[in-house]
Length: 167
Picture 1 (cartoon, rainbow, N blue to C red):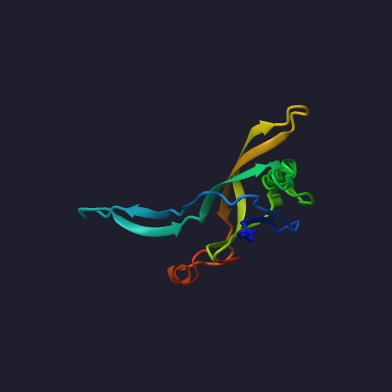
Picture 2: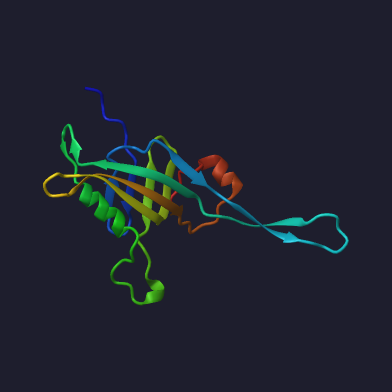
């Protein structure tokens, strides 16, 4: 029997609970935007672009969970609960201003991603159901995470370490 390939992980840094992907996504989509201010000095033939900032790194991916596997069953509802808990504020916030969703860690094997992030969008499609109980047996979760940095990042940093960083 071939060894199981490494799996991606989405971890909740506040609770210490991890969700190892049942199946790795077929694809990941990364987005980074660069923002510029446009200055228009009098008499100049063009606008001057002044660097403002770079957006946070955003990664989108789809996770598939199948409760009816050949080696037993997978708890699709536990995966769903973990994901839903990542998009609502944590308990114990002193006031509304300090309330926030959990800080997460997105890890992708192969030295590709290790990002401290938050989940900014979650969409869950329930695809198959048990014939008797109507419990979800197969679901696909579309997840968008956005990096949550606490330190300045430079071009030289990214050229050296890429997206293998934790704040």
